[in-house]
Length: 231
Image (cartoon, rainbow, N blue to C red; front, side, top):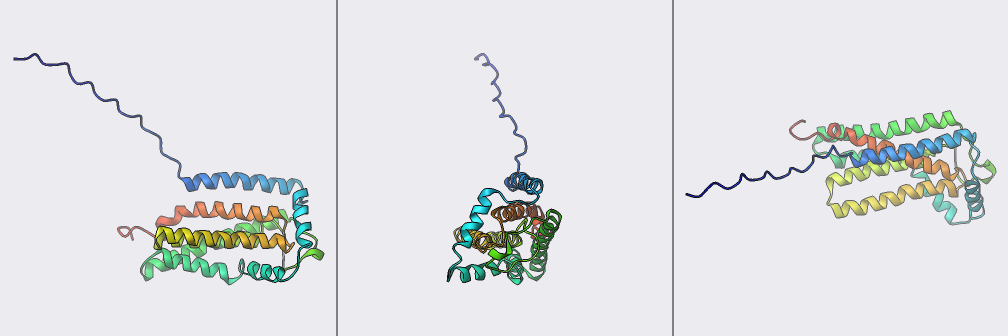
């Protein structure tokens, strides 16, 4: 009879890690800080543009030739009016299945777009940043400058449709769609500077604000597209 060996040494359990911060919330926090800093700068300067902003608008006014100006106007026009809302509706239709589910998803997508626009409009009226000189404009514009309505709205619509594509199509197809949507939203924002109706900071502010709203809106996803067991 052999003597019993030493008791087995229990394996060291790996230390438990704390909950990971969701990447969308991290992105929202970073963009919120950047947007706040930009907003404070605009407020402290009473809307006066920085030297690089003046240089960008000066360059654009010197390059308002055709057909680029007409193309810029056409692209810029897609960033407002019915087009962004049609894209939000399409996002909801792609994201969910069944008439009831699609109706809920469409409602949530349109609500996100409307809320983002509402926040943008409130900040625009509060800060009252003047636009570039009207004599330099090569397109239509109204209201104050910061943040850019076209940049905010197109980025929101692009993000919503990217979400809808992610839930419906294959990943490689979705990535191609995301690239096209990003190019469209970026193009709309850049046309506002090219047409000399916005300072560059207005467009950057619109992109940052839209990113914050979109990342926070992901918290509504379980309600917008509930799990089949919970619907």
